[in-house]
Image (cartoon, rainbow, N blue to C red; front, side):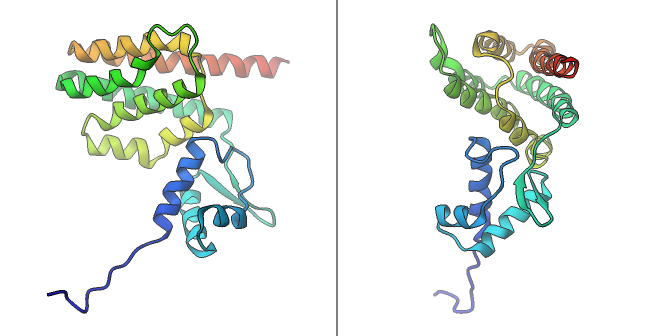
Length: 219
């Protein structure tokens, strides 16, 4: 018999929050863009109240900022913050690769291989599709460890979302082989090599960003 006093409560802001994060990830909302609440509310078919609650949650996570008398905007990451994110990625994803190598989980390895299998033996790689595969790969590196604290640090602090919002730093031609070398080290159970390869992979992108910044400053 159903309890007549049971009340089902649904926080409508949660699905809106998740959808907004997807829009940030896939570039529907871009860094520096003004958030027109009326337009988004209409597109999502929601009222302003749960939308505002979702936006405030994103503001607390430093993905959105409220500018007095101007409105709410997607935050633009400055150079230092981007480099700091890559430093964190290097440590966290390197640790994740080590954990995965030590686990020797064949299903996890297969999931990582599936990310980039479609791009093997392709003369021309669609960068948008590759960017999605790259996003999925780096997300899986963390999630497949089954390490809840690591997962929480990486995703709750929005390291993943901020990186995705910044886009690909290096071309698929530069990184495809690196990804498969990482997967091979994990598959072989070589924890030291897996961690080293991931750290090197991320560090190369970081160094490229640093060099690009130096060139821009000198111009």
